[in-house]
Every structure is written in C-alpha cells, then in structure tokens.
Length: 387
Image (cartoon, rainbow, N blue to C red; front, top):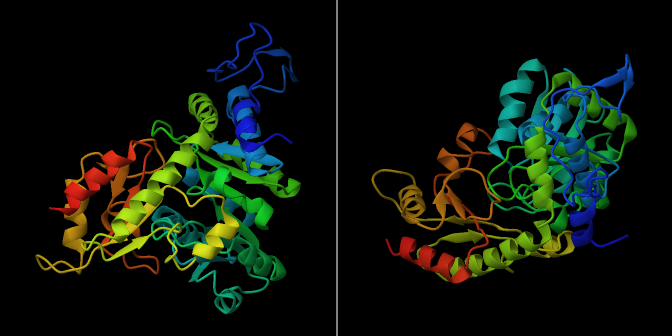
C-alpha cells in the first residue's frame, strides 16, 4: 500500500476519461438522465441518492481512515445525528466523554434526550468509572472525542473500545482535531469515526461538512439509507473542495503541529498564563498516551488565565481581553483552517454547555494555530499578553 501522502493525492482522482483532465470534473447536477425506466447510467439517478463528486470524496475518506465505507454529510452534526439514528432507539443509553464539543452534547441533551435517549458523562480514561457508567444491555454507544474540545484531553481509544465492546456497546471516535493523518481510531479498536470536515480536512474555512467512516457492512447499510432518506448530504461543490483539500492535508498538519508546539512552549513560559493545555508538552497528563496513539500532537492549544476583575469569575476578564487584543489570530468560531483563530469557548462554541457536566469556565481561551510564520504568531501573542 502506498503511503498516506500519496493516497491523499491520488485516491479517487483518476483523470477524466473523456478529456484527460487531471482534476476530475465537478458534477453540479441535481438529477441524471436514465437510459430507460430503471436503467441508470453508472447507478446515478438523483443527487440526494448519489453524486459522482461526493462518491469520490467518500472513497478518499474511507481510504485515509483505513475503513471500508465512508459517508459525507452537510455538517459534522448531521453526521453525528445519523450515527445516533442508525444505532439508538428510545430507552437506549449513551456514555459521553467528560470533555467534548458543546454542539455534540447539545445534540444528545436537547434533541435526542427528548426522544427517549438517556445519557451519562464519564472519565473514559478511568476504567472503573467507565465500567460503572456503562449499563450492559442498555448502553449502545460510547462517544469519544480525542483530542477533546477545548481542553485537549487525550482519551485512550483502545481502552474505551475494549471495555465498550466487552459490555455490548459501539465506540464512536470524533477524530476532527487529529485527522486521519495523525490518528487512526479504527486501527485502535473503534467501530466508527466521525469528522467535522469543515475543520482540518477542509482546511481553508470555506466549506461546511461532516463524515462517517466505518467497517461494519450492516451498520454502513443503515447509515447509507439514512443519508439518502433524511437527505443531509454534502453538496457537490463542498465535496469537491474537501477532496481538493485532502491533497495537502499532510503538509498542512505538519505545519499546524510545528506551530502549535512552538506556541505552547512560548505560553508555558509566560507569567501571565496560568496553565497551557497541549498534548505535545511533557507536562500534559496524557503526553505519553498521545505519543503512543498519535503521530503528532495537533494544531490546537488552550490556555487558562487567573485573576479577578470587574466582578467576573477568575480569569474571565483577562481571557476575553487577550482574545480581543490578538490581531493575526482572528476572533471567530471554528478551527482547522490555514489561518489562526482564537475562541472564548464559554461564550462561543460551548455556550450551550453552560450548567451541564461539560461546562467550560470563562478563564479558558482556545487557539487554532494556523500555518502562518511562527515568528509572527509569537509576536502577536506577546503583544496581546502585554495588554
């Protein structure tokens, strides 16, 4: 088998047979002519059921994650919702990691809980805690996000998957922060991988998408049916842009990782920062696990501020001032683009988690470290911290 970088460029990218175009065409069509009733050309009939551009992306995603099947969706949450619908029924139970994206928790807590799904949160790195939280016969999903959003916790995929399987549950791993270049959950024992392709896989902050990758044929059939029947598919154009971006994923991630490591090491030394969360730091509690489970530590760094001001909770005032003072780091939601972003999770990406077991305190700032010149990024951090 060829290496990752080569497969990322060439999988499902055969030159067009008609013209020899090196880049396959973008199929901007909603429907396809049939040769006769029921005689479909290439199996295509309607864009919701199938599109050659989306199929090419799905083939590439499956290849890079080491899975047999991949499905592309209109967003990461649409992908997650499809997994939930495919596996769960009213009365079933889910165990969630105790640090994860606020939108994922909201999907379970505000949408599916009202339809009879029960949820609990657990430290998935604590075997006793995980075993105690799983309800054999009722728990159908164990949901892992690693590295986690926003605290950059590394959860042991092999441990969680082994215990879940032993007790009759399916393990889902959100691999958005790591990407298949840095981490391969299916090889570590997970049954399903989910992505927000909006992030690193898209890589340029110009698409919205999600993906599900797995090996189980029966489960893939259910997810494929829901993709068709519910219709939350990725558009042809977003699929084309995402597939294009996969070609540079490896080189982009190498730069993201190098820049994030430098940013984390700078922040650790700064007296104005109370704590830095980055798995590439030897002080990170799961540093050794990250070294075993990943080939690089990712491009996300979070930090915590201390102190009190203006009656706000400890560090909240400082965290907001820092986020608003940055100039190269853009204050915006999302992550994983080539440009650096800064986010205040408590009032942005995790606002819906307030008052829940995964609430993020106001003293936390999350950085998506881009691929700009590292000296410029450090200079920007210095000037913001000086304020």
